[in-house]
Length: 86
Image 1 (tube, one colour):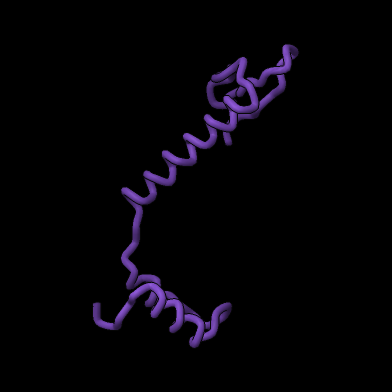
Image 2 (cartoon, rainbow, N blue to C red; image 1 turned 90 degrees about the vertical axis):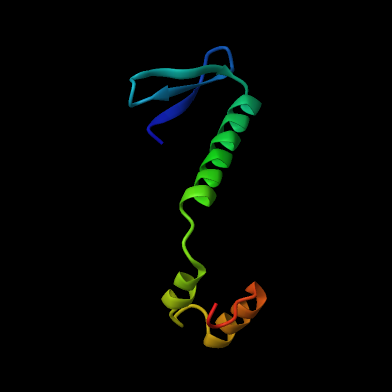
């Protein structure tokens, strides 16, 4: 986060940007700030789903049995509907 949130003297909140060196949002309630962050998270998640998906074969190819046993991984593959050769 290239900035910070501050509580204003009137009890509301502002966001200060360390990129632009000035406030970028002010007189926000807690709810306003939370809604702003939820919208940012939604937009970020949609961007990832729309533009940065990797093929499922990468999951299969990159698996290494350090933190999940082969049996657990095979169960995961079955639960996801994966069948070899797809």
